[in-house]
Image 1 (cartoon, helix red, strand yellow):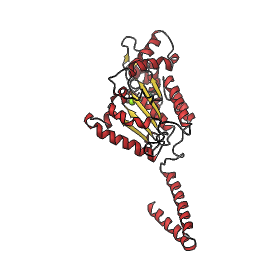
Image 2: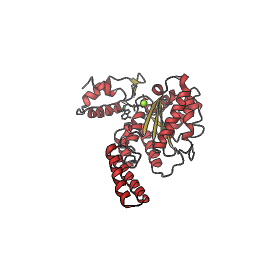
Image 3: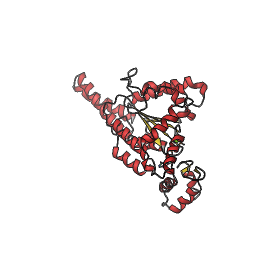
Image 4: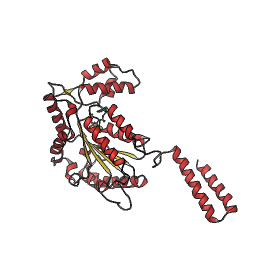
Length: 328
Ligand SMILES: Nc1ncnc2c1ncn2[C@@H]1O[C@H](COP(=O)(O)OP(=O)(O)OP(=O)(O)O)[C@@H](O)[C@H]1O
Ligand SMILES: [Mg+2]
C-alpha cells in the first residue's frame, strides 16, 4: 500500500509540475491525499461517521431483546445515550455509573452501547476498557498510573473526540486515580487544546448492589411485580448505601459532589426465569438448538438467595457459559 502511495504521489506531482504552477501541484497533492485517506478509511477504522455513528433503534432493540430483567437500566441507558448522541454540541462528556449485583449485565450493557455506536463494537480502537485490579493493581504505583491514565485519555481523545472509556471495578479503584480523571468529566470547553465533550465515560461497580437487592426483595415480599420498580425506588437506596459510604474510594472524591456523573444506572438482581432466558440465549450463541429442559436442569443447580426463598441468582447470569457445557 505504501509503495503504491509513494508511486501515485510522484506520478500526480510530476504530471502537474510539468504543465502547471506550484499552487496547482499543491491542490493536486491535497486532493490526492484526501482520496487516499478516503480509501484507507474504507478498509481500516477511522474516527469518522462511516465507523462511528449512533443507532438508536439498534440499541433499543438490543436492550429489549437481549438484556433480561433490567427494565430500569434499559430505560435510563437508552434515554441517556440517545440524548447525548443526538446533541451536536454537548456541554460535557456523558458519564454513566452502572451499579448492581454480580452477573446482572453491567459489562454486557456497556458492550451493547459500544456495538450501537462503533462499527467494531468493543474491538474498536476508540473503545477503551480499564479494569482496576488488572490495570492498576499496586497502590504504591498510583502516581505512575495517574500520569499514564491521563496521557492515555488525553492522547486518545485528541485522536478521536468520540472515544469511549469503560472503567470496571470502579469501587476498587484508588481515589487518587479517580481524582486524576475528574477534569475530563467536567464542563470545560477544552483542556490544553483538547475537548472532551464528545467522549463517553462508563463506570461499573457492585457498590450499592446490596441495597438494590433489598428493594427488589421488598417488592417480591409484598407480592408486587418486579416491573413496578421504578428508578426513584432505587435512587434512594443507591444514595444511602453508596454516597454515604466514606470507605468506598469512589465517593471520597468529588465526582458526586460536583455532579459529574450524569446518570446512576441500577441493575436488579436476576431471578430464575432470567437465568433460563440467559441459558437459552447462550445455547443459541454456542450453535445449539435452544433446549428448555437442558437449561432448566442447569438453572436448578445454581445458587439462589435468600437461602429459604431462593429468589435471586447468586451469580446472576455470569457462570452460565461455563456451566452450560456440563448439561448439553
Ligand atoms: N441481564 C442480563 N441479560 C442478558 N444477559 C446477561 C444479563 N446479565 C448478565 N448476562 C450475561 O452474563 C454475562 C456476564 O454478565 P456481565 O459481565 O455483564 O455481569 P456484570 O454485571 O458486569 O457482573 P460483575 O459485577 O461480576 O462484573 C454477560 O456477558 C451476558 O452474557
Ligand atoms: Mg462486570
